[in-house]
Structure formats: structure tokens, C-alpha cells
Image (cartoon, rainbow, N blue to C red):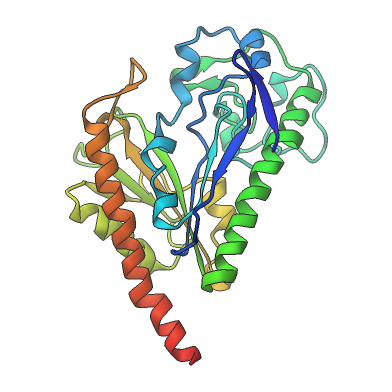
Length: 298
């Protein structure tokens, strides 16, 4: 397990919380909720300790930490998104950020790099520049080799184990969005957005079940707009071979004081409803996918 050095000492860069017994064909991932800030990032940033947190998916790992009790693993980053974004290609790098020339294999022209949100982000939310000076390229490559790649190996292996056991694996990539998320037509700001890369990363029926279950709990749910899913959803969603990936974005206003970086009274309510969502979704998958497959094999 890779580690990062923080003010509290060396901590695991991420954690994979495994169930005692895998009972449902799901894997949950929280790639942006890390809040253990490495000392080398603190030394290099121009931001104060509050401002640098603006890219966190606040407490999303805690919202979903119940899933191991239902029989599914949770992979959660402990390093912050401002340090390294694993929801990007491995080498989406901005040449303006580094004191060295980028290697030929770097993707310097992606729209995410142009927006300052590459694998090594240039900004946090609200366009605040993270670094006071250019970084050495070796530092970026070190983060990618020692943290990014192990994180993705852990995710891929968890998905493969799940598919081997159940014949399918459903990745739920868990995120949060600011309550000021840009409005949809008509001024609508949804409570949640379910993304499937516009129908490519998961079977349509699974996405319909997920959306219906969340809406049935009283939430305003949009599909693919304004968030259709990032690199993780795109990379691991391969429905023809049994891997399905769905991204869920949750409006932070439902459960947290965004400026004070703390949960509010809605946190417990939301977590309880997410538990009902996962249990209901799993029951639907059992009824529609796993039981028919088991019967056909007999």
C-alpha cells in the first residue's frame, strides 16, 4: 500500500474497505474525497488550508462507508484531489505547470488540461491557482507511479474479483457537486446526477434502475447533465464484457456546510437514504440479472 507523508505522519494513500463476504455485484469508488494533505503539497502551494480544500468531494467516502456491510468493497482516496486526480488519464499534464519539457506520451491538449484540471491539477474550484512556482516533472511522475497507478490497480482488481464471482461487476463512482452547480434549462439544479457517458458505460436498464431508485427517495435526479462521468466511468465501463460503470454526483447542499467544510443535519438523512438506494438497487439486480443467469446455468 503506498503512503503519503502528512503533518500526522505517513498515512495510506488510499484504502480498500472489503466486506467480510461479497454478497452483491457492486464496487464503490470515492476518488475525490481525500483530505490527508501531503507535506510536499503544503510546502508548494500558494493557498491557505481552507482554500486548498475547495476541490474535495466533501465526506463522500463517509456517506458510502456502509457498503461493506451490504457486501461490496469501497475504494477511497485519502490523498486530496488537489494533489493528484485519479479521475483523469495517467498523463494529462499541463506543460505550463512544469520546469521541464513534458514527455511525448503526455496528453497536454485535453480539454481538462486546458481547464486547469489535469492529472496534476493547476487549480482548485473557483479558479484558484494551486502552486506558487513551477513543479519539477519528476514530482508529477513520482505521484503517478507511486499513487495513481496503484490506485487503479486496486480498482481494476476489485472489479475483476467481483465479475469473477457474480458474472458482472457494477462500479458506482461516487462524487459530489457544489450546490451552485450550473443550472439546467428552466433553472433546475438537481439533487443528483447519474452519469453513464451518454449510454456507453453501463447497460441502460441498470442506469434506469439507479435513476428510478434515487428519484423514488424524493430526489431530483438528472442524467448525464451536467456530469456524464469522467475517466474512471469511461475506462471501466465495458458492458459487453460484464463491467458496468455509473457515476453519481450528489449536491453538497444536501448534507454539508460547503464553506465551513463540515456535515450538517442532512448528512444522516442522506446516508440513510443512500443505504436504502444501494439495498434496493442490489435487490433489483439480483432479481433481474443474477437469478435468471443462475437458473439458465442449471
